[in-house]
Image (cartoon, one colour):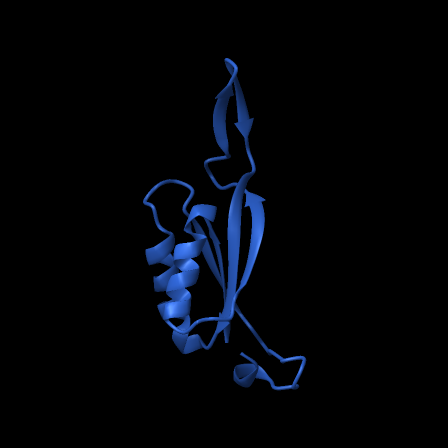
Length: 112
C-alpha cells in the first residue's frame, strides 16, 4: 500500500475529487493547508503599497491505494490539478506498513 499526498490549488479540488471518484477512488482525506514553494509567495498591491503574501492557501489530498494503483491515481491528479503555471503543487508518495479499519478490525487491503 502507498499513501499519495498531493498539495494542489484550491481552485482545482473539485476537478481532482470528481476525477478520482469517477475512477472509483472514493476514499480520501482533504485538508485546507497553507504553504509556499520556490516562488516564496506572491506580491500584491493595495492602496498604492506592495505587500508579500508568503504562505498561500492550498489543499492537501491524501489517499491510500494498493501499490498497483499508484500510477493511475498520480496520473489522475496531475491531469486534473495542472494549470501549467507556477504553484500547481506537488505529489508525495509514502509506503504504508499497515492499515486497520477501526470499526471492524479489518487490516491492510481489506481496510481500504
